[in-house]
Length: 164
Image 1 (cartoon, rainbow, N blue to C red):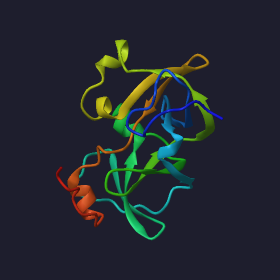
Image 2: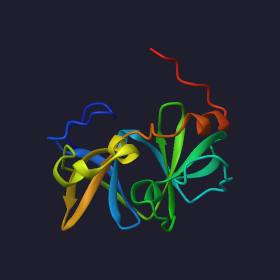
Image 3: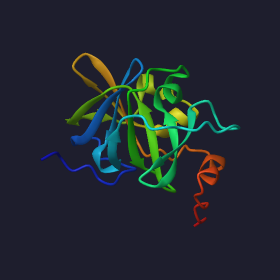
Image 4: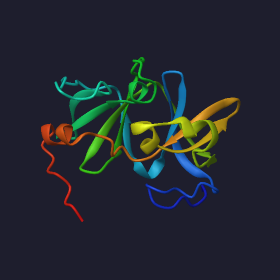
């Protein structure tokens, strides 16, 4: 089995992280496997006005409305071909991540985002848990999709998170 990787928000970056690897446009990305619910073909998605460009809209996952996040647009600002939806656990409910091809599950090794990845700002800084490589390709390990705006969660019918 893979190495221990702590909770979903702070994987132990010095150990291997068992992750689902996928493409997001030109980027190679991964999500810790313990955050992934399932992968599927893209589902019918209804646009939602007034949301950031990376929010494709709302879909229905197993009977519940869920926001759809275009991972390529979120990370690069450009659109990309959507081949799969990856349902992940997020703050108020599931989120469907619209991605390119899913490449499989593997143990990856990453380091905290420093050096060139220190250039990340805003949403991408909150989303990138670590950087590594697979072969000659750079890899971004993403963390929980908590960057979904409150207005999107409310449109999806999810109550606000309680304030601690």
